[in-house]
Amino acid sequence: MPTWHRTKEIWIHRHSKYGHLIDRYWWATLDLLRLRKLKLKLGKRPLVAIILSEQMGDIIACEPVAREVRRRHPDGHIIWFVRRPYVELVAHHPDLDGYLIELCPGHREQLIHSGVFDHIYNLHLSHRKCKYCPDDPVNPNAERIGMHFDNYYDRGDLLYSFSQVAGLPPMTDDPKMYIPESVRQRVDTLPVPMAPDGSGPIVIHCQSSYAPRDWPAGNWHQLVQWLLDTHPYPVVEVGINPVVTIEHPRFRSFCGQLSLLETAEVIRRAHLFIGIDSGPAHMANAVGTDGVILLGRLFDFVNYLPYSGRYKRGEGVSILNNFDHPCAELPYSWVQRAVQQRLGQPKLV
Image 1 (cartoon, helix red, strand yellow):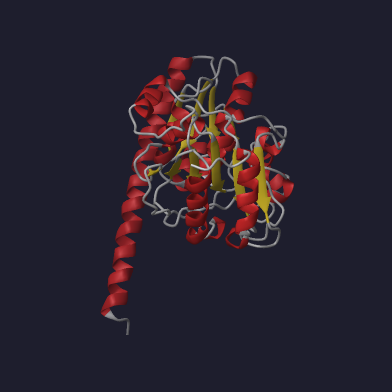
Image 2 (cartoon, helix red, strand yellow; image 1 turned 90 degrees about the horizontal axis):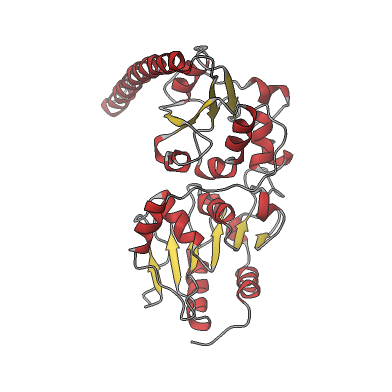
């Protein structure tokens, strides 16, 4: 007989599942009504969907898709499907007319197959399921070209691969971030430390949403202490959870304190960005900040590069990868040497 604890887990799961399904069908119905009303107002103008709802780095890397879709549909009303935490990344794009908040892949599938859209550019790979919905999303373009979760990085960077998944030619453009003046003004009010010569700080990002991408906390502490001891630049940590706990007048953590676009603006002002493969590294690429990026084996991908544009061309970036080893095994000496090469001759402070 099942234990009380197991019975409780089953009923909690059922409650969550059916509650989610009710929300999914309710919001999909409302969204469909809004879209049909919008379509009537548009008249002959096409209603176009770009679908890439997560993750942060994927959305930033694939920003050029919005520009390409606008080129193809200059009179279209273009909407980007996005999960709520990432709305900022698309809300200010000049080539988009709006966005639609995706509740889950099942919600997305219901709208995709409604027939309301005239053109759909779906950048998602097949079989990325919701844990509650019965839908098994399939992207026909991805299936046609044989692009799956186990091989997409073998084909090229994120933009190069996902643009083909969307049915577009392979793209290699430089990504951009659109940061409104209001965000820049908010960052102006933050106590972001500056170097004596007026240049920006060194910005670090140490922890991703997937632990195998990360570099050990002890290495980050050693690197930050070395930077503070030998260079005049302040060091700022960004991200969600702080990793570095050093107390020093030229070190500051903004972890958990900034919005996505505020984080991008702090990175834009940086003298140098140092980070693991995660969303902020894509921000650095998109805002034109020089970087030192730490990579390592990811699943079965050994020699992969997530970035298009400037970082793919090797401009202003040092990309470190101890091939066939996880990022955690990247030697500290490699990182320190790469940072030193980017900063130039040490200046004792």
